[in-house]
Length: 415
Ligand SMILES: *Cc1c(COP(=O)(O)O)cnc(C)c1O
Image (cartoon, rainbow, N blue to C red; front, side, top):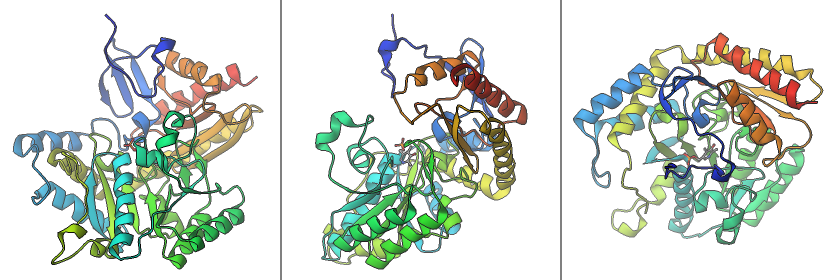
């Protein structure tokens, strides 16, 4: 009997093996048949410290015995209060309100709805959303609408709403001019992945450009939404990528590493002005109309509280700095290879293209996947874009094995 499970982003017809993972620790996954696989992509960008961090695991177990779930409309609980207070403390001062949801996509949906609610409740409805070319914000209809149109969402294109697309900053001035023109024409919000466009191909751009984009939005009163679902929690070398540009967004989306990658949870932080636009002492219809069954699930919040405690108590920044230095060293060793194009590193992320162009459905993709699988490495290139984004607990030896596998891939396919 074949499995009834329908996997995400998987072409079942190709018959590629689907290993069964039984356990994990640090940067290593152990399969049901005993293979040890190095997780070089943090299980799709979520695992920050390492798999099964003992403090997060203990917090989950403890909370599961205390309070598993409770309605969050009109009720609260200690783990949510603790996480919200700590998030407000560690993020820019202007962000004073925390709305919980369950995934990066829903954090983005919430951000867009907050922006539209803000403008409607102020009595000046605005609906146009501005986005950056090649961006990715999730797979629900609204999140896809603000993401790049392409192979990921072609079947659904007729249902996606129209947005204003600002060119990716190959030429920063052209990007800023386009944003200025769109803001002048009137828009509710601009949503952006700060410094790194992840699913768009690990594309980087300068902090100065991010800061200039933020200033343009502020000058026109267009709300600035930072989607730090991937870039948050140290990935780019700092807790938030926005910090490197001195940028304070109006709305901030966080998920993936919020629980250290253990269980699903997301937050959308907002400024007091956005919260106040939904406030009324008489009119219930101004409230924010969003909820999901598991909003602020206590077990997930307990995991997030443990993650925040780890950031406070453990030398997380030192681990990130050490990993960033190691990644830069390894990247330098492939930089001289003729087939390697655009080698780049930022914080814990290193990436390059193998061969010409950048193509998600490059023939190379499946061959690279098989190459890494044969070596017990979890590396999942975006087409011919190879990147390494490991958990911070990866050891120098494990990271060395990942890059050895990459050198072999360059030798095998780069000719
Ligand atoms: C992964 C990602 C999302 C979507 O998060 P999910 O939890 O997969 O819904 C949104 N934005 C960015 C920048 C992401 O990398």
